[in-house]
Amino acid sequence: MRRFLIRLYPERWRERYGAEYEALLDERPLGPWDVADVLLGAVDAHVRGRAPGKASALGRGARMSTRTSGYAAMAGGLLWSAGLFGVTFDPSGRPWAISTMFAMAPWPWPPVAAMLVGMVLILLAVIGLSAVQARQHPRLIWASVIASAFGILVPSIGLVGVQIFGNRSSISEAIALDSAWDIWTLGLFTILGGSAAFALATWRAHVFSRVAALIILSASTLMIATFVGGTTFRAIGPIKASWWLGLFFLELVAFGVGWIALGWSATRGDRSSIEAPVASAKT
Amino acid sequence: MPELGRFAEPALVILVSLSEGPKHGYGITMDVEAGTGRPLGPGTLYAALARLEEAGLIEALPSENRRRPYRLTGLGATVLDARLHELSDLVRVGLDRLRRAAR
Image 1 (tube, each protein chain N blue to C red):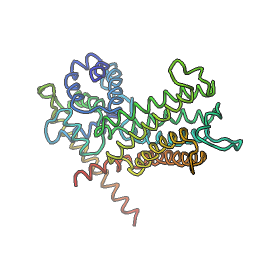
Image 2: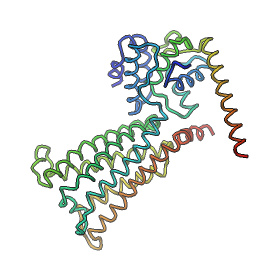
Image 3: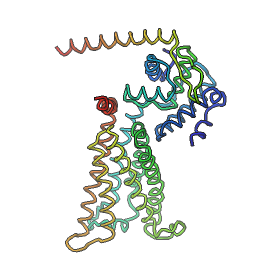
Image 4: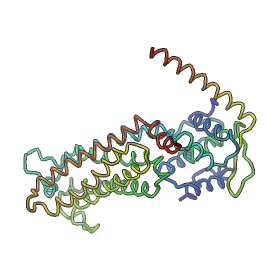
């Protein structure tokens, strides 16, 4: 991957800086933010090669990147949670249950669109906010980015499938899943897993709000457990089906609040929150 | 350093890092991150290094096992000194005004 990234730079640039640049990339773990930075550097080198001496306006500095990613986290958490609530809310007043969510498909398009946009924003936030965490926990960060990216692609297919085909199994035979609902569920788990991995890295890195990271981590994990419980057991003993959904909604709200709080800490404290761990490390 | 555009800030912290002696790319990255708490991506680092070298503010030393150290030139030290004094004046004026406004 490192060699591929270096090959994106102009040949003249590589002749001058290639060897030392490769040594630098070999010495440090590369997170998604670093890869984006290298890609912007390659674009800059090409542009600058055509107009040497002129500074490029391409790309963004780390502070702007952190702030923008914070806004993406806030908007993504809000849209995704609101969208998921929208597809599970039945305005006709029928009793809710996780196990019957799919029966209401096709869902209204506005919450579906909110979920799709929210998922993309969460992925952008994970990449942008990983600038600092990736240095300390590169594997966790890569896992969260890959899971989030997978969690966007898969439920997008599932969501569109649910919208078009409902819960019939006609579209899913080719990918060996029972229904569009199953595809969507798999995607839901991956985006929750990606968020949990990112939250864990954030918690361990002491960079942004640890409380927000803990909320996201807890909510993501519990949502998966509740979803599995609600669809598998439905109603056993004293646990009514609607209780599963009520619990799921609470966790969903916590998930959205967690992302909004994390994004807020990044936009508000993009200076102090990043400097805090360094200051504590010096003491 | 008006011609550095968006790389003016990374360039300044790189010059400050090199003011204590020659460093290679990884050393500069670690020093900047430890000093400012802000990440310095490899693409940004080398975009700034190329501009600083072109402007004659830093110079490359012979490569050591693929790593090439850079050091401040005399011009670089002069420019850095002037820039830091400008910033120092700005900080002093800003703090004075804030104190006056708080009274």
